[in-house]
Image 1 (cartoon, rainbow, N blue to C red):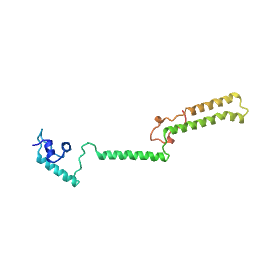
Image 2: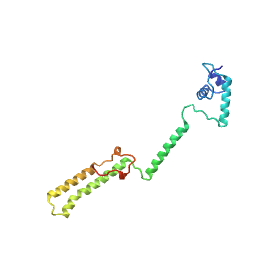
Image 3: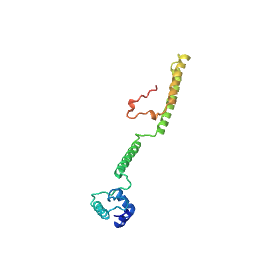
Image 4: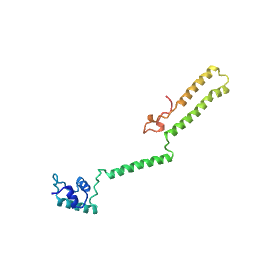
Amino acid sequence: MATQREIAEHIDLGTRRVKELFKCGVLPSGKGRGGLDVDACRLSYIRYLRGLRTKQVEQPDSTGVDVDRERALNLRADTRLKKLKLNQLQKELAPVDLLQWILHKTCAQISDVLGQIPRRIRERVPRLNGGELAIVQREVAKCQSVATAARLDVDEYTAGTTLQDRSIHPS
């Protein structure tokens, strides 16, 4: 009967590597301190080395990490990132800051056009009195207020619906 240190010396490995081989089940474990069978450990290690050479066994992973699973996860993440970059290059995606700037600029243009409506009505329909024109100005001011307050509400956006499914009219 031998200790892990004696097994390591016998098969010419470091004690750390021998501990890893015991942990991975390559070498048979003994009973208690110094209860390892040198012949059984040597035979198991020789069979393990032969299996590695003929690719019948795989190198045990002492870190406990499933390499194939990690590679698959990494590949999936890389694929997702490449799709996002491609969508951005094809102008199918845009940063929220850019969209908010575009919305602000567009709403300012709408507000300017709305502000010209009362003057144009006054020029084209001179018989309107001040009260009627004031009604038009109030309604235009309401529209300008809605346009000025327009914001992108990303949190309200729901996945799985198209633009045709969404109501774009203010409530």
